[in-house]
Image (cartoon, rainbow, N blue to C red; front, side, top):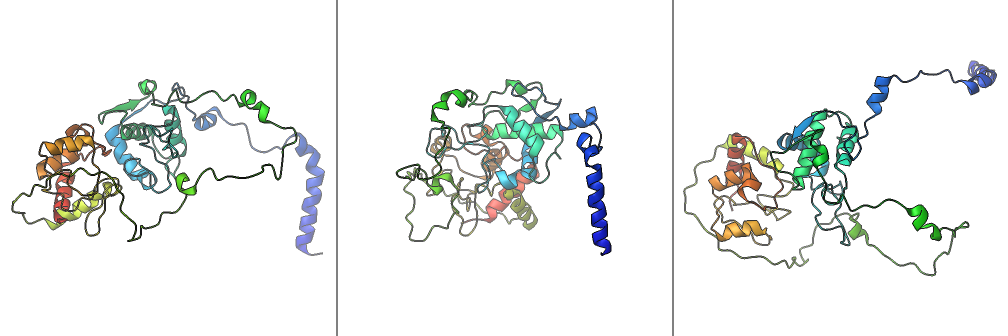
Length: 345
């Protein structure tokens, strides 16, 4: 017998001899310490029970979200591909294809806080500090137009936040309400005379996207036509370094906007040649009522208006659909305007 077989036989014999003892007590490990249990006790209740002391503001949350969450959830929590959307979906729950987000569907903010704290960011769970979690959740609220950009979320005001769908859930009473469907001997084959298709994969959003063919007709969407105002102003020579810096800043915009050759309208309008152009003048894009109202008043995207809008979109234009919180640094504003100006028509 080889040494390997002898060793295996010995191990099996010892395990059989020791089996009765291990059946009573494994003899492995030790009781968890209170602090170890506390480290795993992370759950947060809808009334805020379990929340740690801390706070975080929307603007800090925007930066954290961009760094840690936007790769999957988009810069404005609008979702990337089939990764979950966290914002939007207002009044869609009765639709054939509802958009279920924190703002439209989730009943309790504690679910958001608990999930971010326990499981996010993807691949690096529980690496966020408590204040960072508060800030990210504050930004998610802002992305759903539920708080203003100067809002600070904390354990003290947490329970004051009531999500729009808080009353949209009922107690699960299937044990009583659906008991008449149950069968002690369930059918396992040929249970229905016919099978009908009730949902399409395209509606479920599981079908891979394909590029639209050239022959595919354009969407017939009502577009409000406005007069284009052309300003005859001399364009100063652009600083190459400033333009390059602006291209980096524009990464915050790419989730919704395209610019340059071949750019198309996405969630937001294409921005090629936007500097000096009349607001609301991009063909094929349906603008918000708020923007069209300012367009009728003669709004032109000159450098001053662009700077004011990009600094605080919701303050500049009440009712804008743009969920971006704004650029806080003057140097970022100067850079992105230079980059936009460099991409003229």
